[in-house]
Length: 164
Image (cartoon, helix red, strand yellow):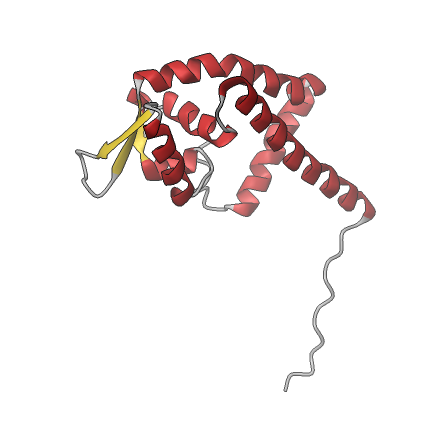
């Protein structure tokens, strides 16, 4: 039997706790605010918009589902459910990848492109209002750097960053 005592947890300092609570508040409240704005103004969730927006920025508005999952910061399973809903609305379609039939391509339709184009101005306004209007240019750069560092701590191989 090992007599070694368990190592004491590395408790957060008071400053770290304040920072952690501020971050968790932002994560929860910002997500809810953006989702609410998109639901209210466009009838779609934030994740649905993210999926279509990421597709809209790819060459030919087409990408493999596995790559789209990484680009939209979601699991392949979650993405499949969302794409199924988007297909029913005529905004996205799926088809086998002609280069490798083991993969499935997600394609933003013309109607999907129109939905992204009509939704984007309100979403950008909300993002600007909730995030960027509250920050200085230096803080925006710091936010980018902090976000990247935290993302890399979570995912050192950058499988969820989609090359960003």
